[in-house]
Amino acid sequence: MDRIIRALSWWWASAPLLLFAPAIAYAVGLPDVRREIGWVFGLMALFNAALAPTAGLVVAQVGGRGEARRRFLIMAAASGVPILFFLFFGVLFPECPDGYHC
Image (cartoon, rainbow, N blue to C red; front, side):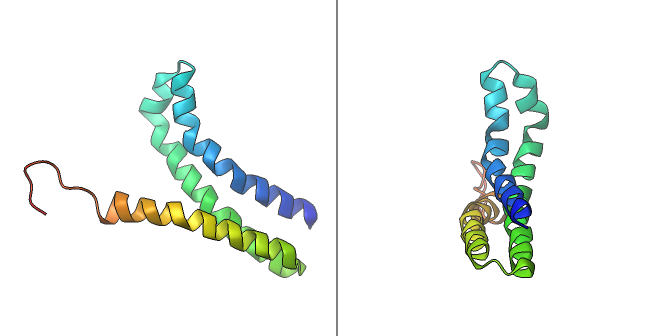
């Protein structure tokens, strides 16, 4: 049970690395990664940030681990802020292009 909890914690911690992977690839001289599949890394980061705490809460609940349950609740809260930010400003409330009236 502890190994699963540890693996889910590391899985959640990989989300920022995935988010910045296209920028890192561009900085080391691989601009095609950012240009062609950069959006995939963003979706994977959002997927990891949402699914890892959810799976962790289920595992901690089944295993009866109170400390791990609290840790995954904190992870879920920390993941929720950027996900809601992305949904609000990226999808629901995008800026209008110049010349258009929203």
